[in-house]
Image (tube, rainbow, N blue to C red; front, side, top):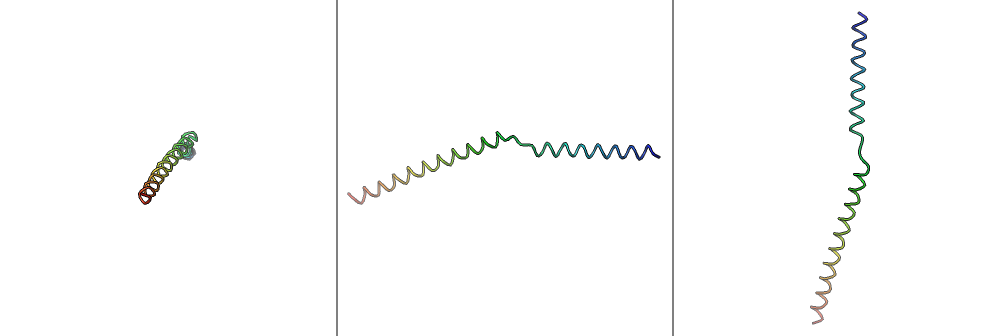
Length: 69
């Protein structure tokens, strides 16, 4: 009788330890990957702003030249 109880308790402990290992694997994230993603996003946003500013400046200057002439 005791053997059966001990086996089930050991079995339950193994399940609990496996769940802890799986949770640890899920929660770990490489910080360098996240930082690189942020840097790349910042570069993309900066490029978009520069292109938008250049297009806006060209549009305003072309309208100014059109109305002057």
